[in-house]
Every structure is written in C-alpha cells, then in structure tokens.
Length: 296
Image 1 (cartoon, rainbow, N blue to C red):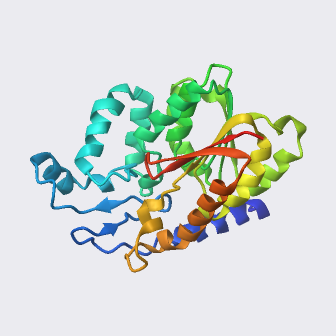
Image 2 (cartoon, helix red, strand yellow):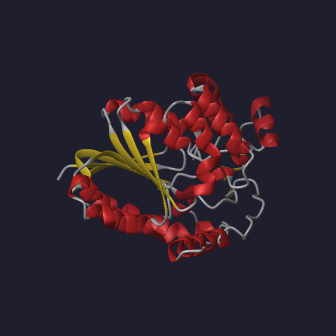
C-alpha cells in the first residue's frame, strides 16, 4: 500500500529529476560547460594550451564525463595524475568495486569522486570522529569511505530519499563487514532532523556531518545541524563551488539544474561566511567542499 510518506518522497524525487531534462550545450574552446546529472555539476574548460598526448587522450575519453569527476581543475590530465598517483593506489578493493558498480548507473555523476572520498577519510581520522551523519547517500561511496575510516564502534546515521540507489552499494558495504556501523533511514531529511532535535541524546552529539543533498535546503539544514553537531565538531557541505557557475557570466549555457540551484549555493556561501558560530574553510576538492567547525 502506498503511504503518504512514500508518496511525498516520490514526488520530491520526481521534482529533482525533472531538473535534469535540459542537456548542456557543447562547449566551445575556453567556455565552461556542465555534464548532465542531478547532483553536483562538473566543470569542463576546453583549453588549447595543453597539447601533450596525455591531454589529447583524456579529451577523447571525456575525463570530465567520467564517473565522479567533479574536480574544478581545468586540466583533465592533471586530475587523472592525482587519481593514478595518490588515490587509486590507496583505494580499498571495496571502494573500487562500488565505484565500478556506480559507473553503470545512469545517475553516476551523483557519486562522490574518489579523491574527495580519500580526503574525507583522512579528515575523519584527524578529528577522531566516532559518531557521524550523512545527508544524501546515493549508492554509498562516501558512506563506505566514512565507514572504513571510523573505529569499529563508530556509527553513521545515513539519510536519503531513495533506498533503491543505496541498495546498489549495500552488498559491497556488507561484504566489507561494515553493516554494523550504518543506520540507513529513508525519507525526507528536514522532518527527520526535526525529529532528532526532539531527542536529547542527539543534541551536541555528532563529531562529523557530511551534507550532499538538495541544495535548496542547505541553509535550512545548517540551523538544525548546528544543534546536532558538538562544539569542536565539523560539518562538511558538498558542492559549494557548484560547477564554477558561481562566478560565471549569466549567459553561460549551463543546464537547467545548475541554473536552478545556483542561487541557493550562493546564499549558503554567504550564510556560512557570516556565521560567527563556526570556523570555515572552502576547499576546491571535487566540486568544492566547505568545512565548518562549530566553535559555540
């Protein structure tokens, strides 16, 4: 039987998908373009300056259209160098398997890129995180990365509107022996955050919260998350450079979803910069991630 909650979730998901039915125009030399996907936009800059063989090969393969490529780097060859030198050799077999599974999914650019997954793992270990939350899961690459980085008694509350996507990666997470760390909750995020705020145990509870969900609600999430993350804890907001569109001319032919969410990302960046309850650093990893350390 279809419940009101499941119907609401379906409507919300369909609304997001509708934004993707506006394919980007092919970029001319020097122009910026974005791939089609419902999550973060990926910056593509066509350059005539790097004419070496590796660069030409990358252009033919369409590196910026590769799975998880959200780098704001203008050189595909340089991004590939980072992956092959520092990321892939240290990627666990479980991460590699899930990345390859995700490649076959039509929405694969929604995934967290492997270099960002590596960054999150190191960050979690540096802050000795134990209790974390993830808003927006998709197939679970960032969730798997987090689970691998946490101690054996670490816990992750993972919330996403679409269980079906999560279940693509669930067998890999189970194979890695990490199921005991994950509490997956399907549904809209705001109501679940409001419910958590009614439970005293969640106030000032989380060491780290990763947000990679609907950009038009980031500011709404922020006020709630500041009550849930502990003083000294960290919130990571993904996609805060939004495909480079934040500083692009208005006539750049970005797809509909990029244009739709751009004002919300701009608003979030302004809110975070003015918030004296946090220390922040906006880092150009992936599509941009802003780290916020709660100080009061």
